[in-house]
Length: 194
Ligand code: GLN
Image 1 (cartoon, rainbow, N blue to C red):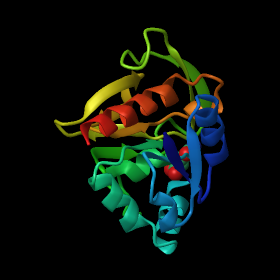
Image 2: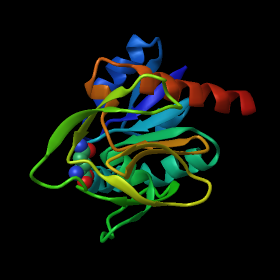
Image 3: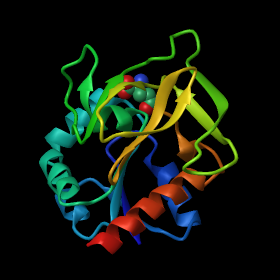
């Protein structure tokens, strides 16, 4: 299995290390050619306006959308969640818009820039996952085909729509590979369908 990690800006190396530790091949995606034989793609955390602008400037935006529409699984973490959203509250910034969700940026307040909580994600594991939030967004609204996977303080922080996944936290910044393993399962499922 080969999963690409969008490598424009943000925490892409950490995603690669986690995937590699789970036996997955990885590619740093910077050019359209890098998308060619990927089984899945991760959009990492970082700064969503910057990553969005670079996606467009590098000519990757439309190719990522096309591959995704053809069935390639895509997972956005944190800034990546924002880029997965069709709507971003109060912002016209570029987004891939792959999921029928509305994202709210910097949603947990400025006082608490980052924190870690044990998060229940039943679909991923029966034991809580140590979720690291850094100036994280949340999902304010989700369409009927979106499945809510986790909430923190009544706010939706992880969701899935078909082969698309979005999480507000950073599973690449822990030593716990369960969420990456879950995405690899999503990729495996989608290959079986083809
Ligand atoms: N606050 C950032 C944004 O809005 C996301 C933060 C992150 O990815 N850790 O783009």
